[in-house]
Image (cartoon, rainbow, N blue to C red; front, top):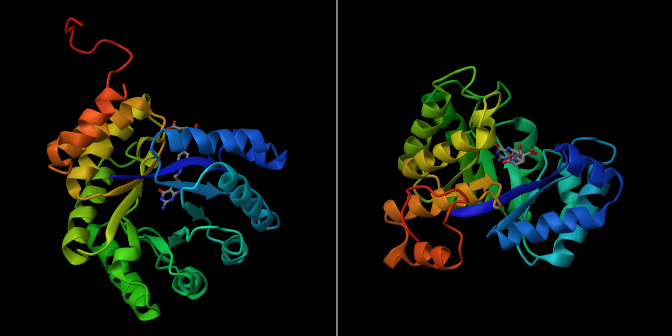
Length: 274
Ligand code: THG
């Protein structure tokens, strides 16, 4: 599975403060640590203040690129901010995101097509997030058709079926997993991605729910996730699940992670003598 590091997100309190105060060291540390944790892309979200977003995003892009060669995942719904940031990236970034919303199809999809970007596509439109699997697939039928028409091939699209909180609807995760299974069949060349943390919103021990969701989503066909790469338990669960699902040839990823000391939890799990 590929990892998009979630931490440089201006909607998080401390990151928002670091952006407002131009605290370069704070942001660059987040970038470096996530790369050490194995992130393949770094999500960069400048927050949602319309008057500052473009300038803040450009500042973040420059800083992150000083300490990391990883491609960025530009997380914004604002076409002007995205276009501005595109002028400053050194590697072709992933764009997060398009959806069935007309504004995004009209104004963000052309940026994706013009620059040959990979793109996250959300299963929602101007009417919101459809409550059923069928509704989410219908939205994606339209988005993929528009993407193809614009010249964006399916294998550059990372479909996000959207994870809603389980606290208010205990069917929410099952709908997400079933949507993933349907997407796998419908769009075999496309990738399937997801941001996990919404699913546990409002419940205690969120990390337990998040990592269990991750394992079930991997079985449903997810190949990319927006996560905290520095969450050890999440990483260990991920490697074991990849192994058990036959996605780790010769157990190489697992044994390498073991030798790097990444798999032992901090508490003894099974009482096995050392
Ligand atoms: N889909 C897509 N993009 C997304 C989301 C999605 N971008 C934003 C969000 N959802 C994913 N990013 C985050 C970033 C941080 C957190 C949650 C989601 C978060 N972090 C904890 C905090 O701020 O306290 C710290 C880490 C943790 O506890 O795991 O909550 O769904 N396409």
